[in-house]
Image 1 (cartoon, helix red, strand yellow):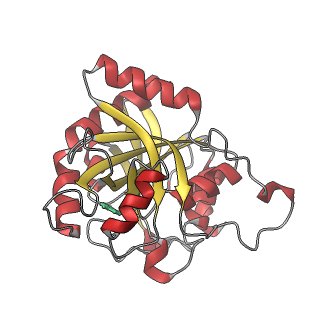
Image 2 (cartoon, rainbow, N blue to C red):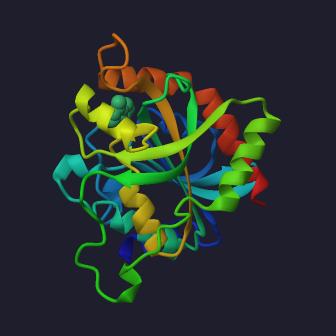
Length: 264
Ligand code: HPA
């Protein structure tokens, strides 16, 4: 793809094996990347810009603990344009750049009183409540992607070990993909609880499917920014999402930095 060629022409000897997608309020992690280059999505053909606050729209090439990484500071969501495969080009670009591991991050609402705002959840599985797939219109047998251990088991174990070693309380759970942009109703949250969901959010699942389709391993973290609808007296808002994502930023940074260093 043209976007891949453009990135390679800017840093020909750059060899990233790890790609990161930084979600709502988590773009600040980009400050801990030793930057080699920063490219606006508008200069990368096929990279959709997100119109959501807290999503900067930069593609970063850099190093974390000496390891080459690429990072997307912000992502587009299904609810922005109703285009379920909006992240197809960026995820394919990761693959073309040589990435083997994709780290996905998001902000989510917790369905579990033991995992409150400001905490981090390791995603162990997901439930797709939208009925949509970014692989619609794909052809060939590769489209029938196996989603068992979509969030790679070994990588999950690594993250849990890192949390332990750093005295971080990390919850693990199932992420429920809701299309948004409206938050859920309390009735929907009650249904999600019965169905085994631990956190609700509006992203990450399409990227997970696309990355697995490309044969890359996936690890995903949710930063819990609120209790889900109806679980407390709080008003749900995007401002609250940004505020609590910021609160969790240190924990998040430690886990991500150590995880990437550990992959060497
Ligand atoms: N629901 C869905 N998406 C979210 C939430 C939520 O409660 N909080 C942050 N993103």
